[in-house]
Length: 119
Image 1: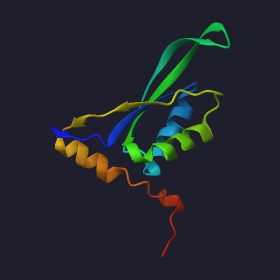
Image 2: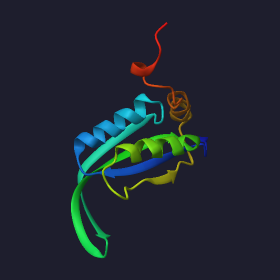
Image 3: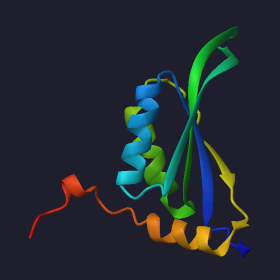
Image 4: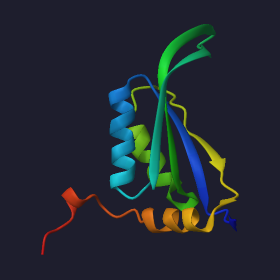
């Protein structure tokens, strides 16, 4: 076990699976997340503007570095249709040494290949 408070998981819910896939790919391709997991559909019951409502949603769980949270949140907010989307950050206390090392290598926040300059 390798202890590390440098990493977090982020939970985001979206109304459609294609949007979950899009956000996941954008986050991983940009280096803002090492991994994204999509689950759903989920049934969410919530209070919005004083009324209890329900909706089907998909959950995206992103693994990233704490220092990348502002950029990751900006990416999610730029593509999310909700007025107040879920963006919940959970601390990661640690994990297996190989997994934590992989997280570190995979979260570089490098531009996607399609945006890199060619030599």
